[in-house]
Picture 1: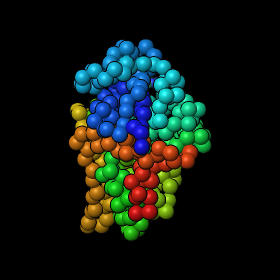
Picture 2: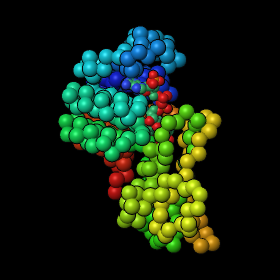
Picture 3: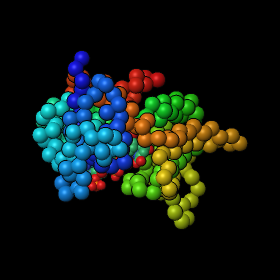
Picture 4: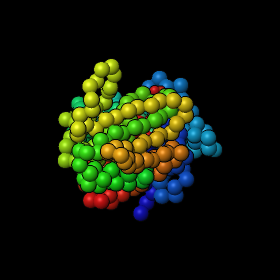
Length: 271
Ligand SMILES: NC(=O)C1=CN([C@@H]2O[C@H](COP(=O)(O)OP(=O)(O)OC[C@H]3O[C@@H](n4cnc5c(N)ncnc54)[C@H](OP(=O)(O)O)[C@@H]3O)[C@@H](O)[C@H]2O)C=CC1
Ligand SMILES: O=C(O)C1=N[C@H](C(=O)O)C[C@H](O)C1
């Protein structure tokens, strides 16, 4: 098969730079575009140089439309508003859209679902193999244990992160809720402050820590009477997310339009 031509949007971001290096290392992939928002100080710079590589001959641009028209897929770790716009453009160009961005509102989610009627979208709050396997384990454990075990999701990230709880924490909370046969809308508890009263049986609680340079750490705690089960994942390098995103792009190439998850990509949906 010919090389898959990819555009990285949010090219100058933490993930954008890691993705440019990961695409460059993959012989079956070709970087054909690197997009930042209009007005970015990086427009016109060489994408390779920005990512700490020799020049790649791909300039950072704000012209997404032209680059999408010449690509097979777009890898997007940006911000919700940008991703919703790129979903519409990728749908128009009928190209694969891999979405790693987190922090979407329900309205954003609806727009992305609408775009997925025209193009294959793979979207996940965490693209790593480890976290998606963890989610499958959480679902299984939650299915086994009854409400005698309280479920709490704890996460820590670097001090630049702008959304909470993390996309991964939500993904893990959803897995726990699915296992229990409930929904996060009904059972999720996202803040506790002041005189909260005792914990309600069946709640799925979330706690958020921010600080330093932590790439991403998640714990799912099943707390029972006199015993506790803890399942955890610690990300040590953003390369794990980039590798997952590129695996998703390869998997989605040629696939029919739809909204897919990393569980689909990794074959974990029925785990
Ligand atoms: N699913 C997963 O596995 C992972 C998801 N993430 C998620 O990815 C997202 C990005 O994370 P991270 O790289 O750390 O964040 P950064 O802030 O470092 O990067 C985001 C980049 O997007 C750019 N951007 C903003 N608007 C646009 C636009 N309209 N077009 C193009 N680029 C735009 C920003 O530019 P500017 O600085 O000029 O605003 C910035 O360079 C977050 O939502 C994060 O939670 C992160 C890691 C893994
Ligand atoms: O913003 C980050 O850095 C990360 N975001 C994702 C999330 O919200 O879970 C994934 C990863 O944990 C890093």
